[in-house]
Image (cartoon, rainbow, N blue to C red; front, top):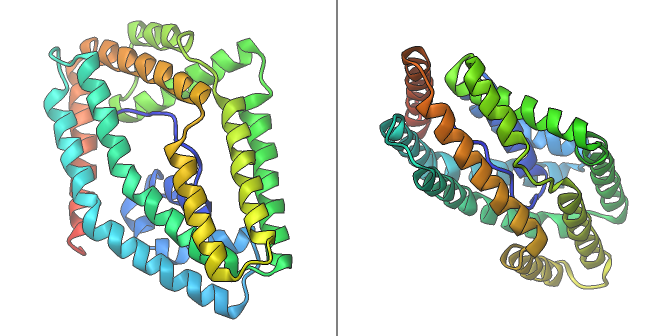
Amino acid sequence: MLTHLSRNATFLFIIVFITIVSACSFKSIYNRLDYLIPSYVEGMVSLDDMLEEEVEQRTKILINWHRNTQLKQYAELLREFQLDFGPQLSEERVLQHMSAMELLWQPLGEKLNEEMAELLPLLNDEQQEELFDSIEDKNEEFYDDYVDLDAEELIEEYIDSLSDNYENWLGDLTDQQEQYVEKAAYKFHSSAALRLQQRKLWQDNIREILASADDPEIKSERLRTFFRKFNDEPNLALAAADEANKQAIAWLTVKLVHASNAEQKDYFINKTDDYIRIFTELAEGR
């Protein structure tokens, strides 16, 4: 129902996880993450047999943790969305849901940071260079897709993205709802350049730590310290843009829900029921 701007990128795992689990065949793909995540990592950096085995083992541990502790919480949050879908929905309530979603993602981010702190120091010089080359390629793609846009292109990007996301949960939007989407697009504050700046800062600090003469154990501890500080001390300008965008999303969500028809409500309930069932079955190993 809600789409909010992602927080600071954490590593390859979070990227592939978010990308994969938002696909159509959620359950079948989720059950293959123990294969797909290592394959994605292998596409970023060549792994020797020891590292490949390490990544595979840690991926299985991560997925089991997520399956056993997080998925039922996702299902419960969707049930709360269903209860609030109606004329009683307020912007304050939407913002509460968004905060709850962020809290659900936080433990995953912490887990991923821990995995990075353990795995990155195991890369040799050649593997490190390959990894950072891959990250730089993705930075260039990010720049082309989200930063190098004029004002008109940016508004069109917002309109397309918002329309696609809300139609995914409501079905086809009415003319009135499409007008609300366009109005909301003008409320957004572009944060792409700031995010790219943060990505590069994150990348440069990790590169510096890995290039040091410290033992792997010390590098791991330095990485943990950096990740905690990086997450606990957000960029103020980026935080302000995020807050403004959350307000825009809350406003738009309320407008679309209040203007929804019976068919859209049924669509939303059926869609969320499917995900609740899938989350529950996955959590129970079915």
